[in-house]
Image (tube, rainbow, N blue to C red; front, side, top):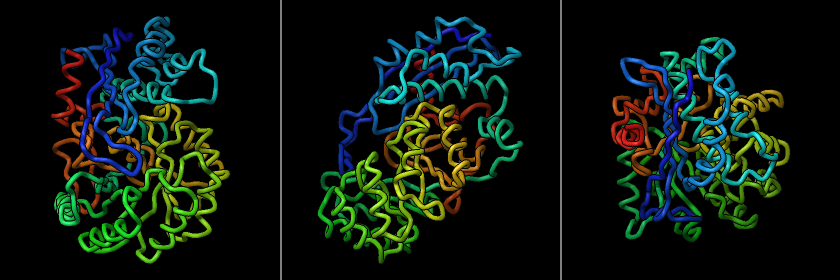
Length: 388
C-alpha cells in the first residue's frame, strides 16, 4: 500500500460578493487528489481535499514543500503500524519536517488541504464514511445522527438592497435552514441595523440570526456595534476585531452579554489556546469557529479539541467555519456543536451532498465511504478531472 501520486490545482471561486474586509473577485481554492494503489470496486482509491474560502490556493507551498516530503518518504513512513491503512498522523509529521513552530502563514492551509485528502482516502480504504471512522477512533463509536447547520450569506453585493437580502434569506429558510448569518461592518452602523432588522423580520427571531464583522472593527467600533446589537438577542456576534487581538475580544465581553463567536482565522492549537487564555471567551455561551482546512487539518484539530477539554471547554461550543463536508463529518463523528453551510455562495465548494436534505436546521450524514464528495456533483466534477 502506498501513495502513488498527489495532484493539485487552483480553482477560481470568483464572485462579486464582499464582506467587511475583502471581495472575492480573484479568490482561488486549492484542490488536491491523493492517489493510492489501493483498489476498491475496480478503481484506485483517491482521497480529495480543498481549502476553505477566504484563503487563496497555496500552490507554491504544495508543490515545493509539502507534497514532495510525502512522496520522497519511505512507504512505511506513511502507513499504520500494521500497514493496513494510511496513517494521517505520520503523514502530517512528514509534511511538517523541518518546519519551525509559529509564524503559520499560509502553510497551515497547504497542510490542511492535503490532510483532508488523506482522511478521505483513509475512510475509503476502511470502507466507512469519515464520520463513522472518527466516532470509532475517538468517541467509542458514538456518532451524532444529525448535525445542526446554519446558512451563511448576506454578503454585500453591487445593487443588492434590502428586498434582495430578504429574498436570499427566505430562500435559505425554504431549503430547510432555521438559522442564517449576514455580514456587517461593510456599511454604516445605521445601514447594518436596517439590514439586520430586515433579516430578523424574515427569520422570525433575533435568535435565528448571526452577524459577522470579519475582523473589521477597532475596539470602539466593536463596542458601538455591541451596544446597538444587544437588544436584538442575536444567536451570536462574530469576529468583531482582528483575530489575534485577544485584548479587544476580552474587553468586548465586558460590553456584550449575549454569545460571541470567533476563531476561523486562528490556524493552530497554540493560537486557539491563546484565545481561550486571553480572549475573554466564555465557555457557557461563546462559539469557537476553528476550520480544519485552514489550520493544519484534522490532526492538529484533534490537539485543539484535547486542549479545550483540559481547560474546561466542551466540543459542543465548536461550530467550524468553512461550510464544507469535512467539517460536517467532524461535527457528527467528534460531537461538535454544528457546522456552517454555504448553500448559495462559493460554489462548487459550498454546501453538502446533493441528496442530503436540510430539515428544520439539521442534516443527516451520507453513508458512502469517505467524506462524501462523490455525492456533490458540481464539486466532484472538478475533483474527477484532477484525478482522471
